[in-house]
Picture 1: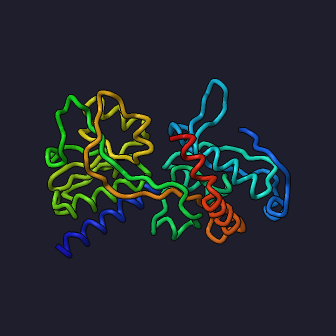
Picture 2: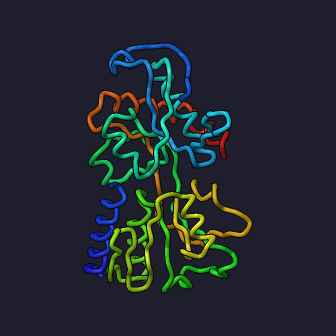
Length: 276
């Protein structure tokens, strides 16, 4: 079993390496803005996750828990304005590394591999990666998925976490039999794993039957869960979302302190209740 788990973890690392290949806020300007050389905090956010970060293209306004957190964060750090920049799982890492955004508040889960590249604030939201199926498939238990196709979002942590979870459960031996030429697909002994570019395409693939189960964060699944779909009673892994900043950035400690203060004074809980 030790060798099996090691194999799964090695493949998980490979998968993770592959996966990671304007509005105004308010209030005054203080030392933080002066230290950063700008009065505007550029925040990378999601634009496609209901109740977390969603862009209404008709009004060009962003809404959601993470939008409110970003505005409060900018306020507490003393920035005069906050600029929202839409990011995707496959683009957010490079956008932060390249300085296109100052920080990420974008359903970005804290993990050991990401901590090698970025600093993170304390977690502001706890979530779990889950599995979603079409009711018409008559799938109600994970054991029914042997020989079938699992779909995950490219650039997310879900693919390596899924490989580890299924190995620990004895669903698979964790060994990869073959991989697709583009690296997005992997054949295991008991299932096929397909990584898909966007959550919308992942949902469409489930509807078309290209994949048999869609795996994603529970917070994101709410956007695509309908009366014709169900969640399986198996959690892939726990996720904790934090605010990411560049490693060693002058922003890292102030951001961490501000998020901790928002946790301590109940601001985060109140915003979660607002969007729950």
